[in-house]
Amino acid sequence: MVEKTKDVETLLGNPKKAMLAMAIPVIISMVVQNANNLIDTAWVAGLGTSALAAVGFAFPLFFIIISVANGIGIGSSSAIARFIGMGDRESANRTAGQAVILTVVLSIIIGAILFFVMEPLFTLLGAGDYVQDCVDYFTPVVLTMPVALTGVVMANILRSEGASRKAMYSQILSAVLNIILDPFFIYDYGLGWGLAGAAWATGISMSVSTLLLIYWYFFSGKTYLRIDFNRFRLDKELDKAIFRVGFPASLEMVVVSVVSMIANVLLVQVDPENGVAIYSTTWKIIQVVMIPIMGMGSSIVPVCAAAYGLRKFDNIKVSYRFAIFSITAIMAVILVIVAFAADYIVMLFTYSDSTAALRPDMTYGLRLSCLFIIFVPWGFVTAGLFQSLGMGFKSLIGTFFRNLILLPIAGFLGIYYGSMEMFWVGVVIAEIVGTLVIGVWGLFVLASLMRQRRGDVPSQLYS
Image 1 (cartoon, rainbow, N blue to C red):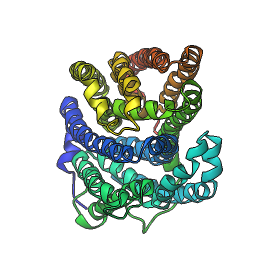
Image 2 (image 1 turned 120 degrees about the vertical axis):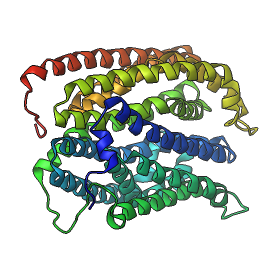
Image 3 (image 1 turned 180 degrees about the vertical axis):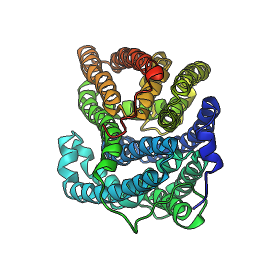
């Protein structure tokens, strides 16, 4: 095990430099991962509208699965970074081991349950004629789940010690491998597995990425943390530290997924034939546009958590403001480009005869979404601030509120007017209002934190 690494020194040093050192690799890895998702969607689009719709129905469920690993990853990252800031390396090591074991156990249990309830579950979610396509796509996801999700958590552990670049390399490996495997697995000039082939390519690629992470932590000797299972034991205090942030973080993603599922039901009422395909595919494009925001929002967690462990509250304030202002400025430029290029972007996913009819509504939705995306940095960075301070439920409440108002507003407008355009109007209204609420709340929390500077209130890591 190495002494304090350069990555750890950067994490504990100048907050602006730490934010950039963390955020740039995260953003790059997200660009590659989301480019991979879009390329995956483009390959699936060649199978027709039914395949796109099936992926649209399956994606929220897949998102829930990922949320379990992401929640544990975010929770452990926050706790580990605070331990590193406090100089408690042993607790950081034990937290990392605890997180990996929890992920393996939970993913096996969840996978076993989903394997037997997939078909009725997709029927319940309104998949209708697409149920078998959904099952074909989702079966490989379930079978590769334990290994794939372990990689998600280990990447978060790397970020918690400031090794954001190593996490980036593992995710780039997964994305590039998936891009290579996709056409060979899907089409007849390769294995010809169709929709299931796309899922197998994803699962295998994520598993290979996990093997790289295992090598770094167990064989390279170049990481600050050591994941040691030889002395593993369940520790209620460490579980508290992980789940105090991780459980709400998982629930946030579950809320988003459940809202997506309900939105699919509403979209069938708005446009029975194309509504789900239009919305789910456009939302994937929107997620790519928001990569810089998501990257900065996730990077603030270990930086501010480490500063909190060090009791350097001024660093937290500097990191928070730097993240919001820098990403908002970048997004303003990106959104102008997206608004003008929307027609061409959408064309990448509507190139076949069976998907060309989706193009007008997807273009409209993408352009209109630019109106709310400019507000999103404030909300994402504030959620990351909450998580870094161990205030996971505050982040959850903000996400719940934003999504709670989305369904009635977008659903009512879309169904009442029978228009996908009005559904998108509802989405924009809900996203702006929800983001403003959580952003203002963040300012109050930050102000309260800064008032603690003089008293230096002791850290309540496990409270």
